[in-house]
Length: 390
Image (cartoon, rainbow, N blue to C red; front, side):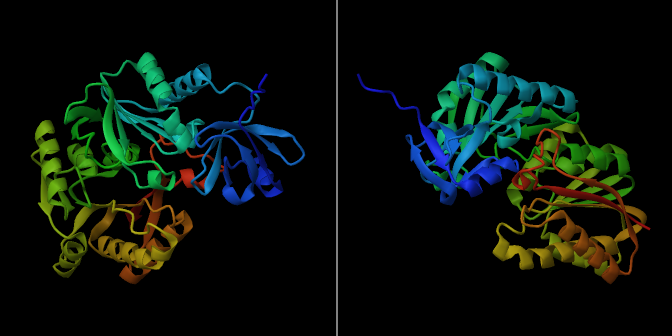
């Protein structure tokens, strides 16, 4: 009789120590041997045979093992169901006045490489490793049972899937998904394109920061890199006039559609290069009560960090110079490679060059539905600083 071999892996001391310190990834160089197919769930032990946990296995990525559980329990339908239930319970605590939010954030919700975002009655998912992709049919069934969405779409077009040997694709996995849907964020209505929009449809990680910015908004507001109008439309009720700026014609069209959905005549969107516009407003001494800076990631890798720092410093310098005394700067960076301390340092240097004194009102991160694992720095990428010019 053939003996059934349970998929398993052995890691070296360095891999064991990494896991002991709380990081759930083991790199290929620290894996001694593996008995299992690509995308299988393997039992992991150290070289002395001690059980360490169960992990998602990839035979292509440098991240060879992604730990899913440290306990010796079956990783089955019941396991994934309870993990998704726990993720949903947490969102019930931290999400309000909103029906678009992140329901599952991969390792932060202990289902590695799985992203699930909710947009009203629809779910948009990403399976970003071989194992997550292999488990996709089961995960879709569980999501249908737990949340009864009208449709589930996979936005599996990120380039990171290529590192796993997976194809990039976008397709409807269950039910039907319309070309565009309307959902609420902080009480504001937005139109989302789940087939072509950014990430799974939009940037949901700034939602809490949009709401907090409204608390400090007043008078004249300039929203730079405004994209679909998330900051502009959310702060509009507290301002007399909001100018949203982005160089993307498509983003401006979307922002104006969202403005029309909410009937906010005090908001004006214009297509322009933010660097050029900030320079112009500085030269003509145009002043604002609030400036919002939410640029795309300037530093996509470590090699681009020096140029990114120069870019961040320039826009923050210009913004600080055009703020009235008592005005607020809301400035963000979504570059994982730019640490918070470095971000604060370049802002301080910008303020010094502008000959202005600024104070920190609040240091923020991504929305609470994107939880940060304390022992996994990769889960913390968004920095959002609210500063006051004295």
